[in-house]
Length: 136
Image (cartoon, rainbow, N blue to C red; front, side):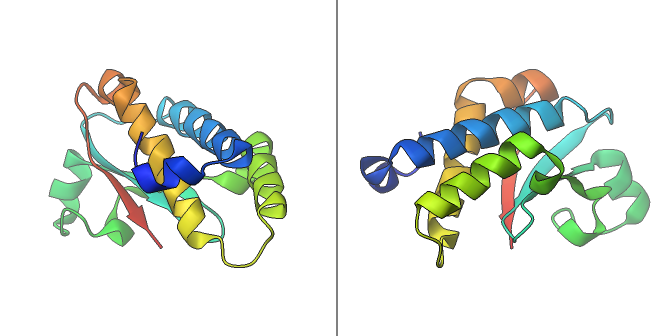
């Protein structure tokens, strides 16, 4: 799993959030019906979101390959649209003590993405391991 320094300090709240994020991402990417998705983005702003782009949209739009704003679905799904993952995030942030949790949240999201790759979920869904980007 992802960041070794983070793993040493990981507590049960981090593990629960990683589990929730992993399940949410896996469920949401199974709802993508477009062909030839070449990258995903996990947004780490206050909403938390998943986005994606396709080769066809890239070709049709003429935009830069990683210009997330111009992607076909820059915000395909948001955490707060899913009660289970939103609830897990709220519990996690409450028990972590509030304040600036950005770095820890980033580490949890990265760990969830890494586990999806390691478990073969990304490759199974998209026929290859596509990049998972992170955005503010």
